[in-house]
Image (cartoon, rainbow, N blue to C red):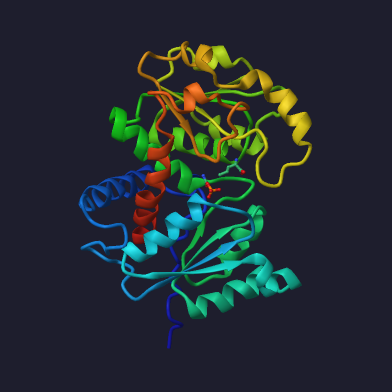
Length: 312
Ligand code: CP
Ligand code: NVA
């Protein structure tokens, strides 16, 4: 008798792993799910509940506000539940391998969302799991955040295809996922970051197959006429040398003068948490162009669509 075919679970580790049509369909589903909740209390389940009776394990090796709460609420609204775990409380902290952890968890729950700095470990988890694994932020990327960001841009300005987004600041995990998104969703991404923090060559090479992403060091040149200006913290989870980083990144602050160079109706985005007075000033993040709390809300809707896709 032939061995049963092994079904490959639908992991969500990086935007670069998926074709544009899949990512666009997830965003469309997120939009539909958000609209369908109008008037419902936050704890009420959706009419359509693809997680009915299913359990999402959430493993956090690092702090989180948005990812933790939005995934928990996502599982509830989709008819399932979430199990909150921290790396420290698991045998992972006592050197049980990530591969064995994957095999064990796969016997108990229906999907895993993990925040762990080491991206290769998350890939290893996925390679050994028989259930979907979702990347809730690694040092390499933050794909769920950028799905919410695309949803947010499109709610305010229509299709992001053909738009120009300026990234000003550090070359970090959020930027990596923005680079992937630019190619997958067809928007121009103009990056301005300091010479001292060059973009990871793997991301640069990946992006070089398209002419949508450009890299420079001048924030004013990147922002000029952009439809959206994005920044992120200067000190990410796991970064050291905070003082040195803040000094190097100081010229990359998004303030009113810089926003004034973008298109008149340009949006301002930040994944949060923000460090006010560092990468962005209050007048911008609290100003009329800022959509940062829509981005935070859309984490919930976008992740519900990711979970529904992963478990369908
Ligand atoms: N943007 C984001 O991922 O926030 P948390 O670190 O609070 O989850
Ligand atoms: N770049 C930031 C994103 C936080 C959501 C970090 O990695 O800490």
